[in-house]
Image (cartoon, rainbow, N blue to C red; front, side, top):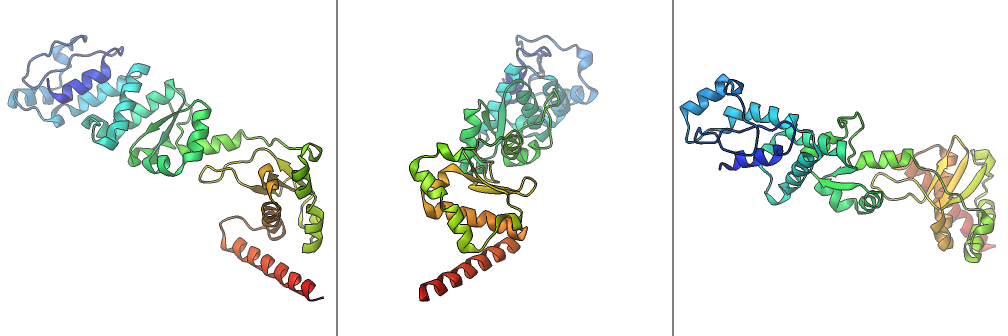
Length: 299
């Protein structure tokens, strides 16, 4: 049987829209599928079958096959389509999944039935921490070609829920995120010692927190994810006037002081990460503190 026919039968077998496909010799392949009435064949398909019975081109029945596949929405079909999609890395993907609309349809069907995150090859290579988080939450990771991965974020499943690529998963995680604050009294002795450097550091920097919009400096067990899926070290929330630092930064004085200085710079200059303005502001802060330190050592 023609590989194309086998592929289509594999995808639609067991679905409520079972069909019989006409084989390359113009004969009805006897498959465990419900026959298609002869009138269901389009004029173009009948002409193509009559014209070249021994070698029917895919273009003759592409529209019909697409229509059949787009009717398939059961979980069994979805898994078969997804497994076939993932085979693109080894060259084992059937040609029909090279049709973008069918590949995207497969993703929508799968997302309707399972918790999935669609990832590209680069996601799989560089998004290790975030992928582990998704697995821990019970998501299945589905590898898709880059051209499909780039369109996932704009789609919904057949129940109207958004499809998740890695960026979408991170955004959803951050939207549902809550801090788990740690009472200073619950810190370990070593952590408490590092945390106690807050006052002396502010004094050495000549910073009065309330003057730059900071009312609290807190410690949290958890933090939001950054653009590559890692938990950030600290954050300044202008709306709540809080600096929040991840608990593991209390492991070493340099880590805690560095993160605190970083967030104080955000607060004092109203600049954001990844901008030249913030880099310049942080450089000025470091330079000013270095000069102050040198003056103190000369006394």
